[in-house]
Length: 150
Image (cartoon, rainbow, N blue to C red; front, side, top):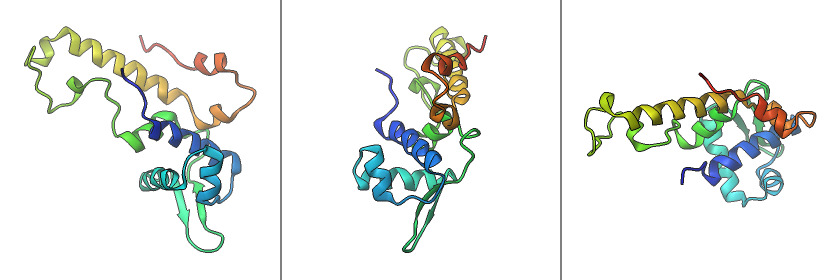
């Protein structure tokens, strides 16, 4: 089964929390709001900070703040900040050598996986933190932003 990890899922949720707050928020408050442990929230926040998605501030009024405009920050960027480049199959990695068909250009399955990966990537790009936080956008509307990249 291919799935987004729990860490990436919570990273998206944390970015939505920070976008709604529009201020510096402490790790304990973020953890409480996201329903995760503070240790797990801090692990995610470190990765997001390392990719320039959030900034961290020290001191009595320290915490974390979203560094990006919610309407410009898409789900793909957040997932890739946590997981690295999106690949639905190991055969899409450049250094993977397939035992079934060593010539990837001749492999129908490799091309199918590439196409599916491209569609998934483009659809994740279409969904922004701003859209996820916008209560006027329904789930049907949100998925309507997605497209098949034919």
